[in-house]
Image (tube, rainbow, N blue to C red):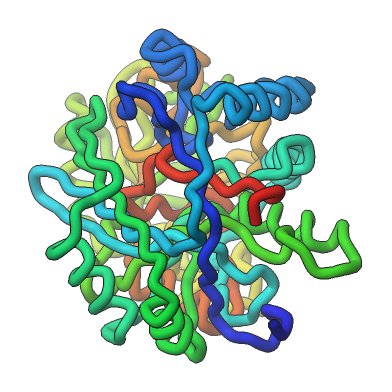
Length: 408
């Protein structure tokens, strides 16, 4: 097969490795970067074989993850599917359904579009784990504009065939999985995807890890591919949610006072009222919260803002709230570098961000979610948004199907 650099968007079948336990929901988990210490304890308490023991072994304990993976394979806790296949995966909740294909994604193709910058720490962590285990333990999440035979197959399989896994997790989501092993069906999917592009919705650090692992090897092999979940965004439009920031050690009142030289600052006694105003604000805006009243920042000084934003980026990129945060509010207003150590992130929940800010005597910065159209446009022209700008969902559940290099 020609290299993925020339083959466009490639999603090939593989021998999936799946848990063979009675309580399948109890061995699954959210993606690794959404698991808090409290979540970790809860997942470990649910089942001795929870996949979190593989995906979060702790820095420096990657060899233990390899030994545990081999132990579970040898004991039958994990079993390898006999036939290679693509996997139709469905997530459903009270208000949404998402379906797509899980397969081995060709790495290095220009048809795979990153849209977000990555940090070296998480890439090094995932790369060490992947080298040790020689496995893809959880899929990245991709979106593409479909409408072709691959999309039709996904819905036909879900409507007409019995699933190989059917479970409900503690968060109330239902998950179903089907194996597609027919060579003609797989060939039709490959032909449909050949000339398409896909946006990385979630898993930029893992995709960077796939690329780094591929660069480790001169010859062809299983490292030329990485586990991925591909969803037709026309059939199943994704939900895009915000990722909030917490600045430890920056008192709220100091943060608000220093912002007044560059922003209009509006004070609210109730956090929810400030959040409602934030959601209704069209231009750049943030809520600062922690101990004390909440503060809504709007209408940044245009001259200061223009001077802070890089001139070599597009106007669409320069208008993104996360770009304004990373290039203006953090470094110019507060003198803070946007690093993993100085700036913590909290997915989705503004109240959780405020609680974390109070624990660290700091300030929570609450954001509106970006617009999907803006993200797609920025990625299409080769730009990347600042780290942790987007949270597309629902995200695939970890532990439903793994990819082991020795089997593929």
